[in-house]
Length: 615
Image (cartoon, rainbow, N blue to C red; front, side):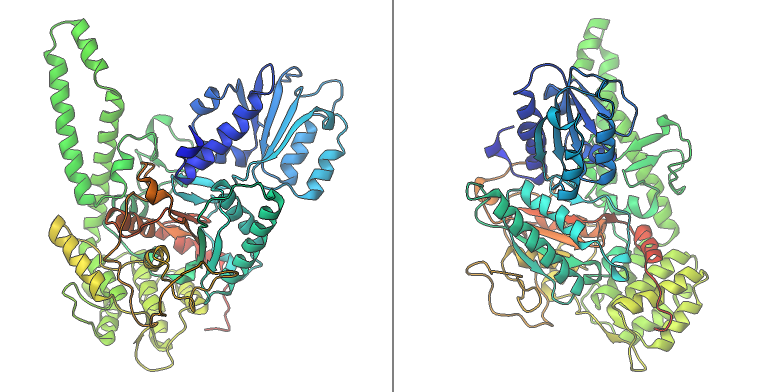
């Protein structure tokens, strides 16, 4: 990999890890090199590259810091660690016995800046210090989910809204993303959120410190990019809505672990890491699946079509194999079909997943349910006719009549969507709460009100958010007409914001810059009530694809969006679609604490303390 060919975040991170670190160290030393990882760095490295890449960097073995290891006093030990007290103490333990050191020469590489107090602790180990040949900060303290998507691998949580949030740690990790990309970005934040402003301040300070530390010879990317920070309260609709996208459906209806593992024998049984499962039944939805990258962002109807066509191709190929006359020709035929078995297994897996998901969706009248959700979020029907808030309230109040088999969770999701888009009278909220059987679910309604969906003071519901604008409604109609499949018209706010930010058109009154403002930024302030059309735009590449595009595209200022509190699969899917439809004209990197599905989002309210005085 050459440095001038780097485009995506994954490209940069992989180059930083392999070329700037492992290969650079390996080229300066003799003898064997062993890579030692702590639990967190194992996850980071696994998200950046494959074991093959480590071996290709001439690393003889990879070991885990937390486990007991055989001593190799004549080998080079390359430690890739988190800058935590626990990892540092385990490092020191490797050299506790002067007569039996774990390794010979030592190369210390930390995922993010090492605190001065931990550096002093390392300095106290007399057996270790003389062996240190390298002391380096990689600044790769995040997990890469897709080439341009990063997370911190956290569990869904809303505790940042009622506990002292670890904003300094969060800012440090976002800063490592900027460092990896060689960005000295402008920092922009959602003014409505105090949390966003505080994180922006922390991030700005850490970036300035890094730039100062890097010195005048540092080669930062030009033109400068921009980090835009929003939080989960920015859009409380997207995490609870159903969708037709394959990946969204799977995470909504099936049981998938945080690592993407799925038990093919128990597709809907809640995932339990402690439960012993047959490895033959577990599959990982990820880069090793030859079809997952193709299917994940598609409409489930399109996935059905492609699976059917693909399986026919496999069947025809199998017939050709059977028609071969002798063993030599049979072997040649198989050799001409790379990954044949993997492809067949992948088709069988996705056929099973789509079938199961479709059964579950049909059982809950998903088409009608999605239509209702779209009307609540967009405030218009599919023809563009504006809906009366009282009519919406009436439908929600009689939900069981329209959906006799509605589950408790789906009922709660409809209620949460309603509160996110309408100011609802307190007495109406109390009536909705009474219809929920689970006390935790009743509690969630009031927690939502406590956050950012305060009840209406009037006796009838009023619209809280703008209705869908005409351009986006027309775009929705065009998608339906072209694909002949049901679609969604609601556009998540983070997607609209991304289009505006890429066009340097975000309202500075709503999204101010923390420090200096890019030259020639923006246009006349838009009215708050005016929706932003995402119908027009230019794009030369896909957001989540590692496919290289034109030099002109990658030379544009990079946009980095960070969502505090989790970003939903639905939001990522819409961002992907906008890229496919040519709506964004610059490199876009998206990050959050974690990626959330509806179950995770609802569960995250358990981490939010209830202010009982509010009710």
